[in-house]
Length: 119
Image (tube, rainbow, N blue to C red; front, side, top):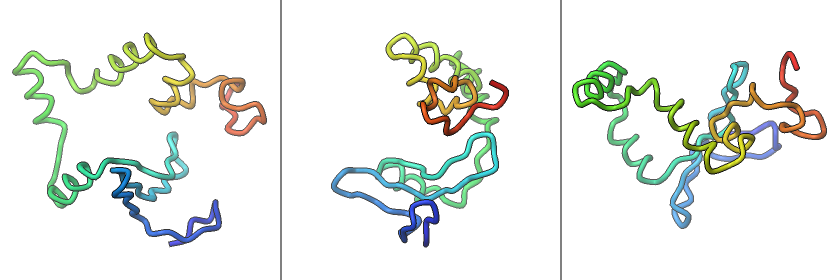
């Protein structure tokens, strides 16, 4: 398949066995959180292939967490955020969690690319 932005041809799924990871061309656009590539381990690829076609919902995971007194899944991102900002700059943490809407223009790039709406 052709990747127009870089003028190159590539397979949608490319695995780098020697490095232990794969990338998948997603090209999700027109959303609040655009995504070009998804990166994941070879083990994750194995699990995806093993479980492809199965239906998954949030309910069993939320029930399991509640029954065992665990942190509800909907709070994981918030807790991860609190832990991350203790050990690294907020700009890096925002990038890791794809919180681009919270980045200031000065944090996002000096050339003005990726301007944040309303700022």
